[in-house]
Image (cartoon, rainbow, N blue to C red; front, side, top):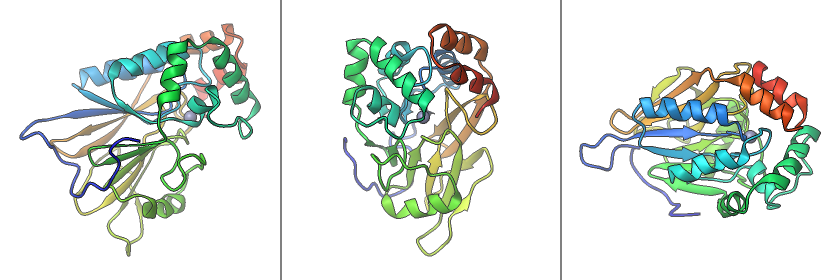
Length: 262
Ligand code: ZN
């Protein structure tokens, strides 16, 4: 973990007058076609820094190339359960059968550099006023799923930063809470301001295996000048990602689910 700690104030710019656009990527799952489409979009949007919320590998057929892309971004990144399972830093006991098979497949194929990078990832990182954790701030290594507004509300006592960014469920979710006495509220707009008088728990969805019924990849942008956080859904070459999974001998269900978004 690096420089974690409370950072008071809004998530505003810290370079005088400078504008910084952040690209936030989660749950890539070795889907190179989705990752490259997300990165091309980020480039178009003049993103200059990235955050990665874990599960770079697992399920898909391109673990090495996806890790290489993320390493190349030199971004703040946390470990997901699949990243740690591949390098034996967490158990596969709770994984379902296709997920477990994909972990075994990945373990056998990745390069030493990929393994070293996955091993080096921490469970929690901080970046500016964001806390980054793959699953939940209340138990980063327990891999619990924060799915509902009620789940999210409980998590607010587990972090002190203005905003906590998570992944893991592959379902986008944004929750705002004004203070400890008020109830948390779900934010339904795809673009919203990170206000100085509130705190946020934001699930950034999944680049490589969306599960909210929308098969398009999900990428989140944050603009430090406007303090706007925005969710973007984009089509990508699902067919190629599916063909690679099948010809790699990975479970067919892992290909099928990509076109259905579950
Ligand atoms: Zn995942």
